[in-house]
Picture (cartoon, rainbow, N blue to C red):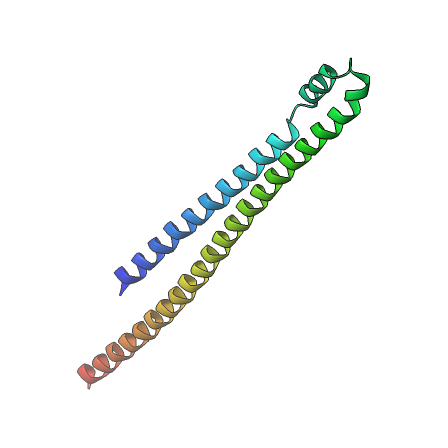
Length: 133
């Protein structure tokens, strides 16, 4: 019974450790994606626009085309990041549900262990009383 309790505790510890690892990976991935978005260099955008600046009539068209492409690229990136976050959140939710199930099982095991220990103590007391009489 003690071995079962120890194995349950070890399983929960391992599960919780993997849960924390997944949480850290998710946080790290979010941080990297945010840094990528923030570090998108506006200076390269300016350079691209300046390439067309000597063409007055073409300049506004180029800016519109460039802006449209950039917005579309950012929108695609945002959609991908949103999808990744949704998947990670779903994984986290599943892990949390599993952790809750394991915790309920552990509580049940601990209750069963306490009940068995109480029964054992009672039997020892009865045996002692029987031996004394």
